[in-house]
Length: 381
Image 1 (spheres, rainbow, N blue to C red):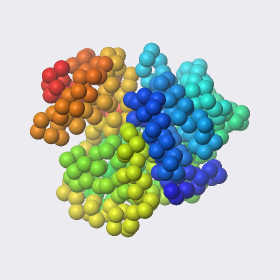
Image 2: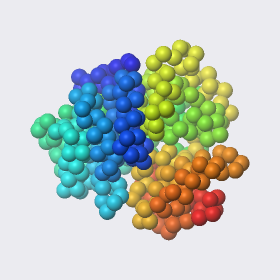
Image 3: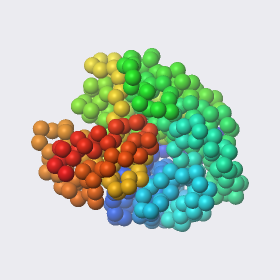
Image 4: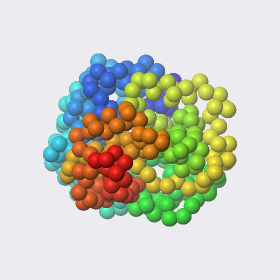
């Protein structure tokens, strides 16, 4: 495993990291198996944005005896309310959720305290004006967090955070498809027109962000490096051709300021495909040739299963429903395993009441209500 400097923090992180989102759906034994598989390969950074109590406890227990060898990227502003995830700026709720995170991780500090999911300018202003940033600075002064970070999908917000001066790490959505698209608060605006997929066509704002981070010593950790797995599948890829995990990793890791790409492993068997990057040759890493010959030239907005659509008033696991829909339509007949997973869900697409609250929270402006109707028709309920 190769380790990289995490900006100016003084920390060294594995260039391949563990994103914890899929661990939310696994029991303690399964979570530990994934964590142990990652640690055995030298992975030492883990991201936990999830507020669900069980996954926090499961991850915390899995790393408890090895805490000092993990760099934890823990999110602040992600809370658990009435049995569901919420993004919050209410300081009382923020503080309670952070105390819960520390307790469940059996630690007195987070290495990286991440201001959770800021995509809009008004939200960034709220963070600065309502005491949230002051709270972050106090946590750092008290040693409860070692460094301040922020997660965003919007390069304009990321640049504001870098220029602010307090933020040392940005968790940013970065892959060959997203890099073509200009910044917006409304992600749907990205898909009004088609964009050239030649790498020379990278959006200037994104290129500026990466260079600014490099200049300021602000590290980038990467989420959605595979676009929720879509870039790995020719049928779902916005380019009309598939990339390999190694190619996606190489693209992200060759951007300025990138320290680590965080991969959401669903089981230990998925780890080797990404770890293969460490021994891959130049031919295996070559994404440019693949993209240059791609038949399509625009990324279309689709669910990347990030979970920001929560909470749902009917307790639908929207991300999983969308994932199962995508898996189902890839084949002529719905696989029995997909039917079984769908049947086992607590709530189904047919339970959707079309309130569209989820659509306002989706960072990619997916038409979720339409997807729920399509899914209900496909599965029959």
